Image (cartoon, rainbow, N blue to C red; front, side, top):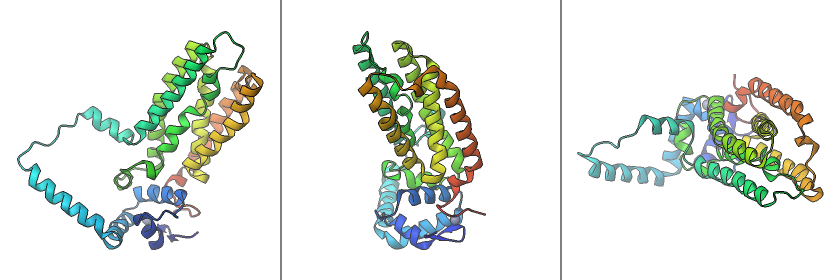
Length: 276
Ligand SMILES: [Zn+2]
């Protein structure tokens, strides 16, 4: 494995990360961030690397502090409601636009389904339901989309717990929307929601090997090319979305959940190397 020294991140990897090296693979970046969450020595090395390699950032921070000190004196601290604090603990603000996009995709599918009512075409809500949450799940783990990621990774939270928390937020938003949309167009709630759950849990399970973002892209593309496109061409819903496939989806959820539990450490491990 390149980039690590023993169980810790190597200097080369940390330098590349701090200097915003664009050739650094997204998976290495993601794994380093997950590792930083639980490793104080590596967080300290990142802080040192920032001071050495990007002095401009340090100067900028010093200037900001000086400006803040000058203006903030005598003003009350901004009031944060406990509710807002709790919301931010569960999801980074950068996840919000992607969640809204998921909701928009589901609502667009609902609109098209309602326009096509009475015609003999497969329901778009049904076809899209497995991949709708993947946008939000992938966005939760892409540093380029999360301007606060450097701050997030320095907080002491366990890797898997953070993954599950962010995924729960996505499902908490997407499931009610899909359930209502499915209800409006008359699709069975189980057929809408079980594949959606299976794809989400499956993405995390596959993500322990490939990185969550790659897993989401891989599964999403496979579903679009393997099921959505053929269904639209033949105007017949795939057998995968027929009621008799429900047990298979249930099995997929169970197997993926077990895989995540078994490989939970992958979320705090750098690629290719297990931590002791
Ligand atoms: Zn470390």
